[in-house]
Length: 417
Image 1 (cartoon, rainbow, N blue to C red):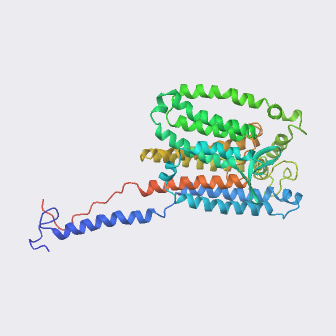
Image 2: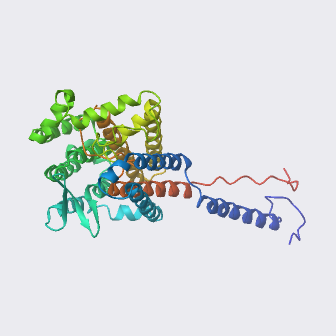
Image 3: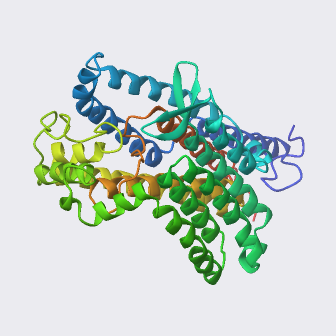
């Protein structure tokens, strides 16, 4: 083809070299994309696996006595936890392949749908009560705590809202107020159930996402002050007030209102630095209520000591930090919706873990919140895996669509200067 001789790359006669360079560039574009399709973010995956493994160990250790007292198999709660983890992996795999743009398209009605879902628990025959709280709906042979799904829906709705009102939220008070008013609506429904812990977490998630969107500090502080009376009035309920008083001094009534907290503190104190050893906890033997769910961290502190506590805190910190970094990467890649979703998931996991650990250590009043990925609780496990599946999808799309750096082809044909 070079019938004009070999004038060198860049000259009109070098037709073959041009065709070779074009084919090489096309292959360079195809090759990395095929490799990117299977790459997984290890900084995100490893903390999740470590927390799930820790949860399996602790649920197995803390639930044996409870299972025996209920007349079921010794490993009943562990087997159930494994089943929920497998179902959660299926949910995460499903949302891992759903494009983020689809979630953005369906984000608008999710806040109102969240309110409707929360109201389902008050329908006779649908809602299910446990220990005086109506937080579950009956789905055949299992009960589902609807607020866990509501947390995901609120995050997706808020991400869509902040994208649509990206500039207005920064300067207009009403656009900052609107999502928080909707959060107050959900809070009111949750306080009726009652579920003050989840209400506080959802309010904090919404406030945190608005703040990360660039809302003015004065607007955030004003709205925070406006929300205090709502939680103040809710705290005046006799049983909530009793919890707050017992939180201030649980040893004043260690066999009644302060029983849960005193037993949790005894468990933490017995662990000291190195713990009493796996399976050697005494507090889980009918002393500590809900040892495999709300107070599983106290059992962990007793069996693995201060070192175990620091390890779990570090893994949670690593997971939340990585999710927030992925959100920042999405914003830099001009994908604000994906960025806000990642921020919301990071805030949710971080805040709920912080509250759950704080309750177990006596830093916060007693709340019925599970420790993400560790506590036994089907609804929490399923929705946490779903949310993490969305984050994995965001990371995948960022890697897949990142601009490619095509290496320059070296000049080996003696091109003319």
